[in-house]
Each structure stands twice: as structure tokens, then as C-alpha cells.
Length: 161
Ligand SMILES: O=P(O)(O)OC[C@H]1O[C@H](OP(=O)(O)OP(=O)(O)O)[C@H](O)[C@@H]1O
Ligand SMILES: Nc1nc2[nH]cnc2c(=O)[nH]1
Ligand SMILES: [Mg+2]
Image (cartoon, rainbow, N blue to C red; front, side, top):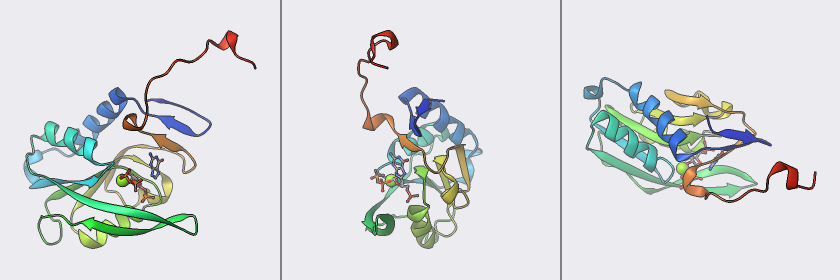
């Protein structure tokens, strides 16, 4: 696991790779899948890792955008649709996380027969995914490695506390 304080959870590249490989392992046998659908943008890196592990070369993307509405992220719009079977049957839909579930609720209408998987899941959206690797508290904010950079921190003894 990464490490978290104050309800923030920082995920390293190595931890994301490990957890996503575990997610991929659970989708065996690979032959049951026609292809992978990445939910852009957060699902792009996990989808690449799963595609590599399952040796699946057909990787599609679906592009969505969520808007703040009354401080809730409850309006999802489709920016780019996906090319796959009509109802998504035989496809794996991959996102980095499910939080409120609004994104996946929206995509489930479009792809009712697809299998939805995420690396991380929070309680409000947990029932909307068919598989995930790690659950976190609803209040925890997940920081992904592509949103961070390494930086210096003072030794404990040098801090004002
Ligand atoms: O379950 P929800 O409450 O819908 O939240 C989960 C979604 O939020 C994040 O995407 P975001 O919309 O921030 O865009 P991004 O993937 O382009 O960064 C994340 O990648 C999931 O797709
Ligand atoms: N990076 C990030 N994006 C999110 N979108 C919805 N919840 C989260 C979260 O916990 N972390
Ligand atoms: Mg996203």
C-alpha cells in the first residue's frame, strides 16, 4: 500500500503497478475478453497495464466529463463514445477509481453487459463495480502518481511542532 495521513492516500507508481497487476490477474482467462475500454483519463494507465498483462491488443477509450453542480459531481457527459459490441458484452471497462459512482452509473447505461473494474473503490460506488483491488473510506482523497512529484521534506527534528 502507499501511505495516507489526514484522509489523503498517496499512491506511488510501484503501488499502482502492483495493484493493477492484481486486478488483471483476477480477469483471467484472458480469452473471455474481446477488448478493453479505458475510461479516460484516469483509466488510461490502469488499462494499459491490464492490456499488457492479459495480452489484449484491442484497447478502446470512452471519454467523459463531469461537472460540478450544487457542489456535487453529478452531471456526466459523453465527450467521445466507444467502438465495441452494442451492449459492451465481452469488454472490460477500466477506471482508476469509483467514488460517488456517477461516472460508472452513466457508463453502465451505455454498456450494460460490460464488466466494470477499478483499482480503488469508495463505499458509495462500490456496488457499481464488478471487481476492485482496494477499498478506501469515502472521505479519503486518492492522489495518483501522475498528479504528484517527489519533493524534499524536513527531518522530524527540524520541524516546528
Ligand atoms: O465515481 P465518481 O464520483 O464519478 O468519480 C470517479 C471518477 O472521477 C475521476 O475522474 P475525473 O472525472 O476527475 O476525470 P479524469 O479521469 O479525466 O481525471 C476518476 O478518474 C473517475 O473516473
Ligand atoms: N484523484 C482523485 N480523483 C477523484 N475523483 C473522484 N474521487 C477522486 C479521488 O479520490 N482522487
Ligand atoms: Mg476519470
